[in-house]
Length: 63
Image 1: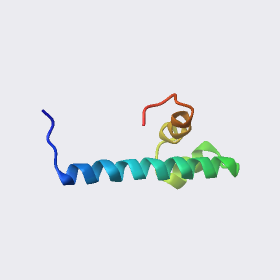
Image 2: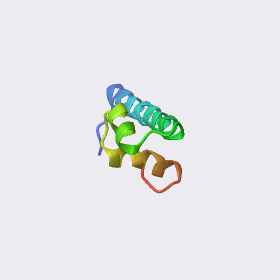
Image 3: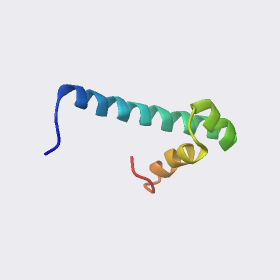
Image 4: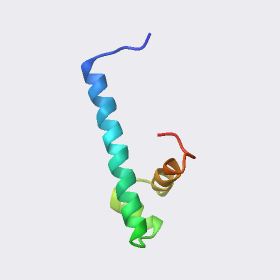
């Protein structure tokens, strides 16, 4: 059985909001012509993580 609490629910919600914001930031930066390196640096993530945000939009990556 997995533990449940209001704090864990809040953490899950915060994680979802972060991933949504990151995906939108990556989309905007790439649409403006930013390189993968610059996009990743601006978002403070690895290049593979930035790319995964767009893969997620296409249904290729887990949320």
